[in-house]
Amino acid sequence: MSIVGAFDVHRRQLTYDYVDELSGQVFRGQVAGTRMALREWLGRFAGREDCAFAVEGCTGWRYVVEELARAGVRAHLAEPADTAAARGRKRHANVPRRSGCP
Image (cartoon, rainbow, N blue to C red; front, side, top):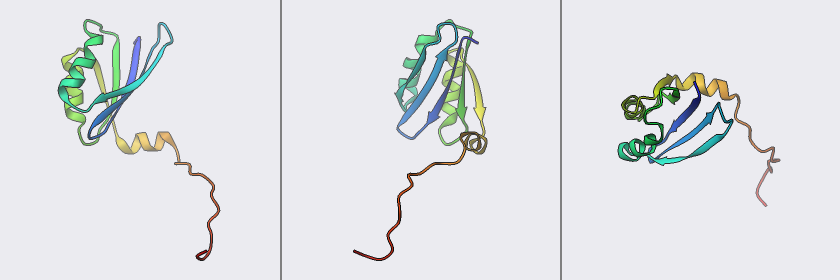
């Protein structure tokens, strides 16, 4: 594969990250969370057979996978629990807690 990436599906937007393995360039951004906006964005990969994107299998994944297939981009569906485990523990700022009111 020369283009490898992933989508994070949200209600109003899709966040993407992908890398062009030939040039080493990394791309990040957002696409409006509509079928037509995604279809237009995927036009940049038209005619390429060396593209693959992972999509987290949560609410809204189906239209994303359908549009990837329509554009000829290979789609990989990821289990949400597995992707959360791969990210590791969430880290929070170490802020001391006050006891009592000021």
